Image 1 (cartoon, rainbow, N blue to C red):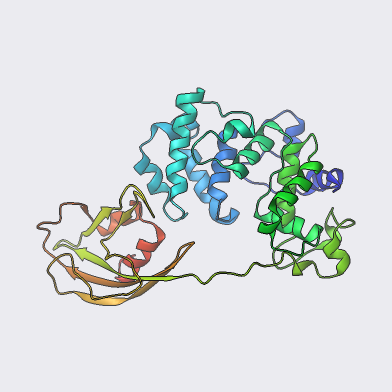
Image 2: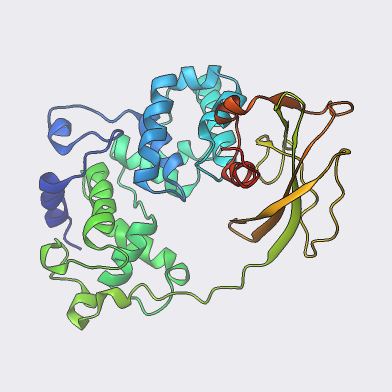
Length: 342
């Protein structure tokens, strides 16, 4: 793989991203901030650049340094994270910030091996931070690169069956400018060698790409056989008091959507069953909300009622205008919207 051509392309066409130091600035001696790179990489897991930008700017405005993030309560982080999904990332983010401050004096370790000792930082994220911030010559293999390499080698099996081989091949190509090379390959996958289009004529890997030589680059990567996603069903209960406030509560500290804010629900199971309403009231059914998690599809029947607040002591009552500031994941914002609350 011709890393020289890749870097020359990147020097001309690097994307401008709020967490990135441009190739020109790198040549002037500006170094990437590990805090900002780490934050962006955690946010970008399972999420697009377009969705992340606003969150990144808000986080770095509220908490400009890892010390600031470590010092804020977890509830604040969860509240600002709401809408990004995969909420374990937010809890790990906060735990990692605290570990960096408490165990490393506020400085991130400068190697992939050292970074993996921190909460929530795995093989990919550690490699990305180590390469981008410290130019460690380590292969950084994300979803975009999976696609680029699968096409470059015309990989005839799903990527997950050849991950180690692809990582080994990429490792051999990593140059001294490891950080710029990693970001260049990411940009190639995002802009040139995209999922549904391959602009081979302007790709710096054009000459060596086997899929291009075969004339069918978008045939790769080979898709794995998908297992059918199971369906779980349940009921969601939106309760309002006489003043119009909405009853909310926190989810358990462990498990799916841990620590986030919700309205009460039934258990989620294979069968819907009859609703077991949490309080007396004239309950009205609104409709169904569907939300797809990584491992299952959830279907919730949405109910609402005006109830007396007596006995509802496990949570709190929030006025409708305050809902925007609550740490409500997308699922429960859908539930509230179905019940007529934006």
